[in-house]
Length: 293
Image 1 (cartoon, rainbow, N blue to C red):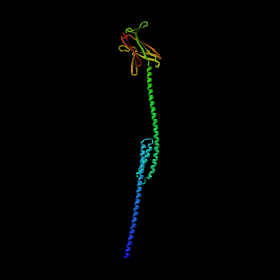
Image 2 (image 1 turned 45 degrees about the vertical axis):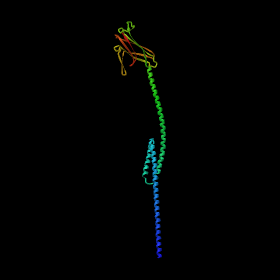
Image 3 (image 1 turned 90 degrees about the vertical axis):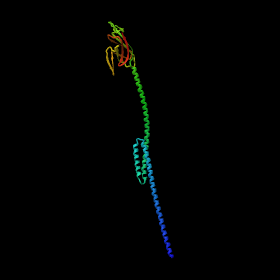
Image 4 (image 1 turned 180 degrees about the vertical axis):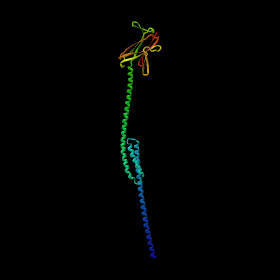
């Protein structure tokens, strides 16, 4: 009876020992599974953190390129090419499911390229600023020169007009009278239309040192009270104007005062008022009138 009880105790101890061993094994397995899960979680977390970091850096890099491209400098083409490389790398990182740290080196290369291009871009912008300042200064100088030239042109035009005006000859002291010619050739002044044989017309051309010397022609027009032109009654055209004149007075002018006297022969002069006009081409330069009874 005692032996049977001892055997029962021994069996119980063995069962307890086996259970203890199984328990320890289960605890170890649970610990190992838990540790492996933590390691996996840590790897995944690290991988995601690195991916997000690379993506953020790439996005910042792209933003910098976009801002530089928007300035529209001469380096825009190079900047666009590098920006496109950043965009392509962002797509690769976004699609990756493993370790994103392998893209870090490519990012650093792109970042290095950006620094080089930005330095060149800043240099070009400074040069452009300098050139713009120089150009603006040149524009100002040219504008001032243009204004000065315009003033000179205006002064020259005014001076030319003044010289032209001053160089015109002045016709003065115009006088007319009718004469009776005696058989002896002597001429007597008359105011009787029936006695008049010739009209004597005289005028003075004033001295002018800046006028052009040489042969001059003046067209003399004598009109009776019925608007008839006496004398040659020839017509001359000047531009779009015509002039019917009685005779031409040819004068040799040498910048000194000249007295001009011309005779207009006629017969059967009508009574009334006569008008005498002197033209320099188509410009009226003197006029007078007289009356025959």
